[in-house]
Amino acid sequence: MAGAGAHEETARRPPVRGHMLARLAGLVGFVVVAFVATAWIIERRTRDDDFSATVRSVETLLDQKIATATGLMRATVAALGTSDEIAHAFLSRDRSGLQARSEALFETLHRDHRVTHLYFTGLDRVNFLRMHEPESFGDEIDRYTIRTAAATGAPSSGIELGPFGTLTLRSVTPWRHDGETIGLIELGEEIGPLLADIGASLGVDLYALTRHDEIRPGTWHYGRRMLGQPPGMIEVGDHVLVSQSVAAIGPAEQALLPDLVRDGTIRTVTTQGRPLSIATAPLKDASGRRVGVLAIFADRSRAQATFTNWIVIATLASLAAGGMVFWSFNRALSRVEADYRRQHELEHRLLTISDEHQRLVQIEKLSAMGTMIGEIAHQMNNPLVGVVNMAQLAERSLDRPERVREMLAEIRKAGQNCSAFVKRMLNFTKVSRFDGRSTDLRGVVDEALALFHQSIGRRVSVTCDLPDAAAVAVVDPNLLAHALFNLLSNAAQAIGERGHIRVVLSRADHVDGRPGWRVAVEDDGPGIPDDAMRRLFTPFFTTRKDGTGLGLAVVQHIVLLHEGEVTAGNRPEGGASLALWLPETISTASTNA
Image 1 (tube, rainbow, N blue to C red):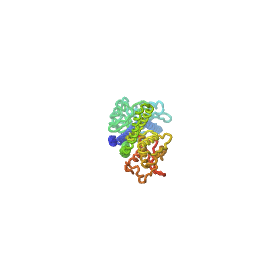
Image 2: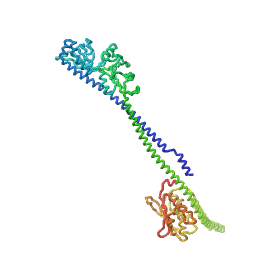
Image 3: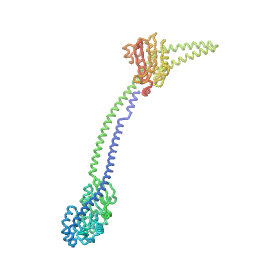
Image 4: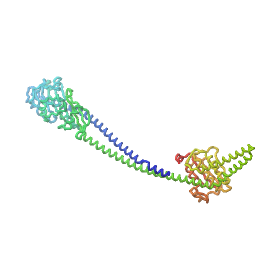
């Protein structure tokens, strides 16, 4: 029944491997998800940080481009101012002659350096000649750069919004000839090519927008036509798009401009399936006045695709590695589970064997009790006869109280002996599991000898060699007394009528270093034959016709329950010696067996 219960418990036990593999799969999934999420967050932060750096690079590169272009313009003006012919034409108010002498230089500057404006202006800021528009002259120019250059006599440069709604980088330099300042020479370059260079260098699209109130509606179309650009005005809230780094603005970018101009914070949006990082930078003119914003767009499609590809590759690699770990863990768990099942089956078999041994012990006890029944009757009859006789004598001695008390004491003593004998018999036949507890082995030897003397039918000479101090070990006293009784009974049968038995209890350590005790039962009989020595502890093997063959097998089983050893051998001086070695302490598993 115990084995069936163990199998039912095994059947009810949840599949440990399945639970562990499920947890492992959950852990692998969590790690992969955490990796992807972490990589995604880091990529977002890195992308925003990179774009913030790009915005700063746009501002820095724009300043550098302005400085470089301004330096080139001032060097050009310096070379132009050394021409006596150009100076004489300006001083003589020969407009056509000045145009003719400057036309080749202006074409070169326009072709090679993208200069779109060349002005010759008097110190009174009245324009004398516009090379890009010769028919327009005689007006007073009221811009910051020309006012500053005329007032200070020093060059002045910067981005300015022209009357036609164009953003132009202008450089105004006082014109000195023969030691005198005779006028002002102005060179200008539209900001569009500068934005195109910056956009190409940094991989962004740039859009310059100015406030709507800075534009003169009547001159807008003229200025756009002069620059060869579409005349339409793209209005973005209270701003107007005046220049860009690309040929034309796309519809997606145009749709994003209103919110971008209003907000301006760095962010990434997805439009038409494309991730775009967008931001704005302030656009200031030469005087430092904010005239608009510079919208910055960065297409992140390629970077996003690259990141996505790497994430997919890393995820697949992680899943593959996780799959390998899962497979290896599954194999290891399979082996562990198989080992566990084998161990459980072995434990079940050992449990079954243990139950069988207990039944064998009981059978052997009952058999021993059967052979001892006659002796028991004799042992019980003698004191009972004495009790009856002394009771009769007591009845005749009622007038002698002292004699009656003596007889009653003898009756009580005989009754106590019978009670003790019955108690030993009950303990001897009791079936119980191993019950280990700290016990003085000397008491166990005494108990086994008392049972032996009361149950044996003849007087047998037995001497004991016991230590003076307590010999304490963790044992089951009932089982151990039964084992010693079996050894004593075997020795009594071997010595016959005149032999002698000696019981020796001594301290003895095991070969592996464990402390313990040795109990030896020695006799001076004929010894053990060699053929019987090999099968001495085999169940049901016996050399006596009336024997069960279970006595020594039970002894061995009891000693194994104590994690001890039993040995048998012949003494040199004759006779046999069977010894039990018992450890002082035993494992918890044995005490629960």
